[in-house]
Length: 114
Ligand code: 5GP
Ligand code: ZN
Image 1 (cartoon, rainbow, N blue to C red):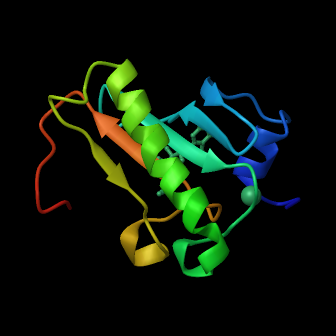
Image 2: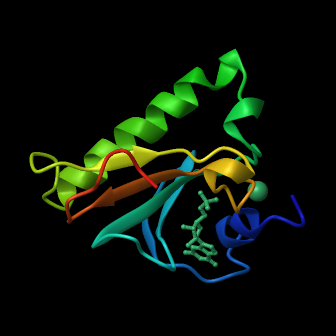
């Protein structure tokens, strides 16, 4: 999608710190990290919000979640704990309308979230 920040990053038109990529996903460091580990797991295909997922995307979502677990393990946080979050639409704080799974770890994460 021409106007989408994450499509531009995935296409290599905007630089990002890539921590993992394959045919389906790209994982980048968040530019404004909210924890010592803050990675965004982004599907290469543009999907605007979680509301736009279809049953055929069930495998994609599972792959995203399992990649978060693998990255948490690689970073040494899988036993200590980590948080995975999809923000959906404005009241939940979604600012980039191309789905991405936040992976946060490395400090105590309060609940309920703000
Ligand atoms: P959202 O608010 O949509 O759930 O999350 C978007 C995330 O993208 C935010 O945490 C924000 O810091 C991050 N972000 C925004 N612009 C850029 C950018 O240009 N590069 C990277 N790596 N992250 C970005
Ligand atoms: Zn996009």
